[in-house]
Amino acid sequence: MFPNKARIVSLLDASIKEMELLQQMSAGINIPDDFISSISGLTVYRACGMSLQYITENFIKVRNIQGRDFFSPYKEIPWEDVFGMRNFLCHEYGDSDPEGIFNTVKEDVPILLDVTRKILKDIDANPGNSAI
Image (cartoon, rainbow, N blue to C red; front, side, top):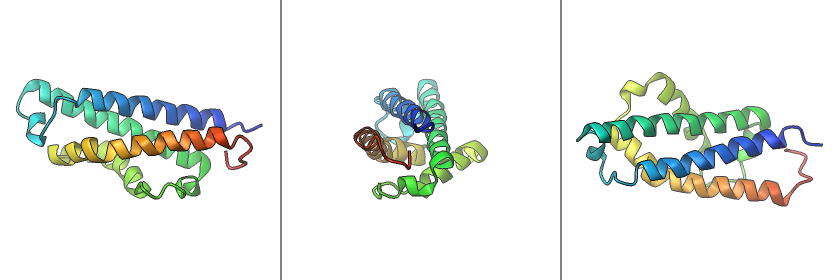
């Protein structure tokens, strides 16, 4: 009945799994300099960048399917920044810095993870929602 619902749920589920993985990968990173103080830190830094790129790409795909209004009830997230981060990570990755990635991973991702879980609950609670 809603051909896009399965795709939206799949993209959001994948984003949740990636955010959980991102948190696990970065668990030993306590300050931005931990990303650049060793080869293992640098590896985590690059992995975090790729995870953020994947996550933000998924949200762009949802936006492209559903439109920007889909995210409007979830005001705790600056969605335009999420969409813009994907472009930055894809095209300007060399300009990223450990502090920016650190702050995104440690401060923004936990909020985005909670909101993404809420979006999925809202989708599940409203199976007749014609927007999906």
